[in-house]
Image (cartoon, rainbow, N blue to C red; front, side, top):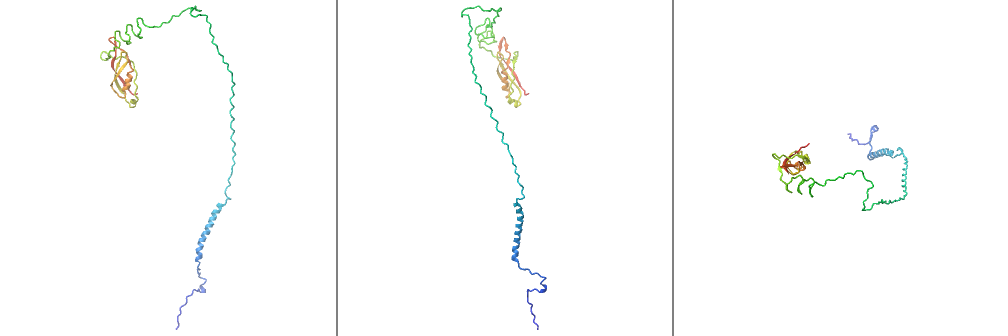
Length: 258
């Protein structure tokens, strides 16, 4: 009997197929260093291409230097010449001696004038009083008056006696206005646009001057202005039964914005 024998495993490659296969060699250690080394070499080459042109100074433009020459400032103007000295002139003070006119007239002795005028002008004599007047009287008084009386009064009156004023009603009319002063429009009333009529009661003395003013119809912002104006008014003196009398009457003061 023939014994079967197992073929032995061998790594030998037959000569027939030796040219058709490649056997990979174990180069693990060499491949581990090849890749990093290649990267480093490429990085150094790229860096050299970038840095070397920057370090080269051959291509930089030359700096042009300009020379500027500045003219020196002009010299300061010369100082003005000193003022000429005034020559001291000797002023001769001449003293004029008063000349006294010689007169042959002796004091206390009458001497005839040298020239006699042909016409002699009449001397103007001022009026020093009225015939029948008395010492202590006043200008404008009347003959027979009383010392201390009032100008415009009547004869026979008593010094210091003043009759009460009469109210202007009926036959007694208000006196005629001689002097009128317009009232001043108060600024506060003007700004507030206040206007209207203020009625006051005025009392005159025997001379026609307003002595007392009382408000009958009031506008608070205008009352004082109306009173101040009426106090300056002057009326014709009122003569009643031959005697001067004061009068009481009403006055209308109108305020109107323009």
